[in-house]
Amino acid sequence: MIKTIVQLVAARFSKAVPVIGAALALSCTVVGLTSSSAEAVENKRDQGIKLYNAKNFKDAGQLLDQHLTVYPQDVYALYYDALACQALGNMGKAKIYYRQVATLAPNHQLGGYAKAVLKQIDPSFAGGGQSAGSSSSTSASSGSSASNGLMTAAASSTKLDSSIPMEWDVYCAPGDHGVWVDVELNGRRVKMIFDTGAPTVFIGKNQLEEMGVEAPKGAANSAAGGSSASGTVAAWLVPMKVKVGPVERTVPVQVVETNHSNPLLGQSYAGLFEYTIDPGAKRIHFKQRGYSTGANRNAYEVPFTFRQAGSRIIVSVEINGKANPCMFDTGNSACGIMFHSPAQANQYGVQVPDDAENMVTGGVTGQSVAKAFTIRRARLGPIDRVDLPVTVSNTGSNELPLLGQPFWQGYEYTINQQKKVIEFVRR
Image 1 (cartoon, rainbow, N blue to C red):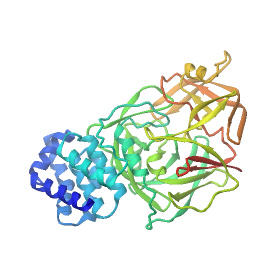
Image 2 (cartoon, rainbow, N blue to C red; image 1 turned 90 degrees about the vertical axis):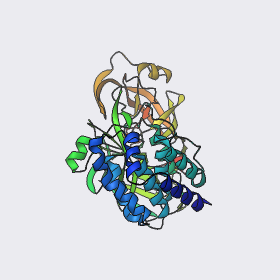
Image 3 (cartoon, helix red, strand yellow; image 1 turned 90 degrees about the horizontal axis):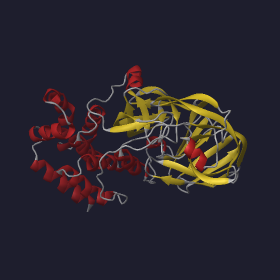
């Protein structure tokens, strides 16, 4: 049934729109390209479409991927890339691209086709197609509702993949600013902070240029903000090849013009797998979702809730005797808990003392001044801290406070998405 629908949609589309002429004209309208850039668009995009129609799905997908790194909103390229991925059996990537089409062009013919396919191949799809809007952020927020849909689709599958290891280790280097890992982005190596609070892999055009990776062009299609400074900046949400250790995946990457902080390895890649971070052993242990090696009897399980909007991991933390929700954020290395305003701190029973120190905090959109002091006690599962360092900024964000690395220092922890628990082991 699925194959029939996909073939019908593809065939109907091919008859309705000539591949080069009308397709190019419509994409110039949808993507917002000028006539001067039309010839450049035609090259890899239309070559890829021709290869797809010739049933050369692998080469078609490669060309379309290259085109999309520069023109991420070209719905024709996205749609044909989705068809090529599905023909090759890469359903996870196909779902990502179909959702982008449905989001970018919800009222267009292609958006309707994408929705029809998604209803058959993705039970989690609710017939969406929402427009992009801004949202508040943590270490790096994705201001596009499209990115949330992409990551939900990408992270929903628990089918084991025989083309990659069932489990593997990656070296990491704990530092003052977080846990560093080596990443390959479109084949170029870069060090990133492993950040559970970042919805996507996140980087700046300035950093891409230093790496020799071509930055996205055209109009921005999302917005990004940070925990350390108020406001948002224009961003580009684009698919890129991200490789950590032996495993490469094409995932959404958010790019800003200038990143004032470190590149982040966020949930659009990390959330595809189960992972254990062991700072003491300097390793991250990845495991395919659905692959069981038995329960860790030495682990203390702390339940969390997963909020799909922004891919947030939320835990209940007891602060000065009162339990309240916080976001588990490995990208917050500055303090045990980061509050976004004095009013928020008050809601959590925390008063900013008159003798609190001023400190400068940095994030993806710049720097701001925060008040730094200690609170009497904070507890989560087996971890019980006294005189925990916290900060209170004034960014105006309505996001939850960030629970950071100084809180769980000395513990190995596993994010178990299947059981929705964080497994802590004392090291």
